[in-house]
Image (cartoon, rainbow, N blue to C red):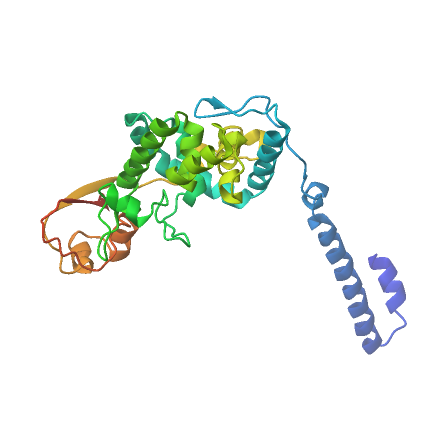
Length: 311
């Protein structure tokens, strides 16, 4: 290359030599850039479209120990819909899995203590995604409890405190409701359906249509999908690899180690109280979302258990 350049440039003036060297340099730079780009090109696997396919319907599937009648075509079709809708909503599923790691260890023992099948933990997932959300009808918290239901079951709900946002107390209220519904309907499937529709509404539909099974009822769209959605989310979360999910248990969220502080007086300012405990007001409200105001009147000297991260 050097000999060739010397042969080419010997007859040239200094000005033309500079032009020639510039052109050669640009050519070499362009060739190098093209080479680098080809090395950085995506691997074929990276540009391949995601595989979209239906998933096989399980031959047997139960909710709370009660089998879905999958031999019936419409039951199989409704379950298939919920499996497809929920399995391909990957971001939501991953977030639910991560939150489950945080909250299921609290929920599961309360369900067990009350004799409620563990599958009902998935009911909280489809109700709220384990977030403290509010429905258009005013149902609130992890278990989406209406104000009237919460008050009837001993929850404190006012401008300063709303225990529907208390994970332990709201789970206990959900258990109380589900036990009563089971006693009324005789099976957990209808108890679950009534959690969405109400016991009175469920009983009325059963009487009107002369049937005794959820799977034989003609219902509004939301309740008609309700149990199928719980069953589908359960099936997906218990068989993640079959649905293409790569998820490890240590990827879930968790609570930091907590201290419990008893407060049985009024609190003039939660901001100052939090600061006195070495935490921010944001941290206080994050781990005690049932606190709804910047102060606590507490005229009855009720004892509240406050969670703060251990130091």
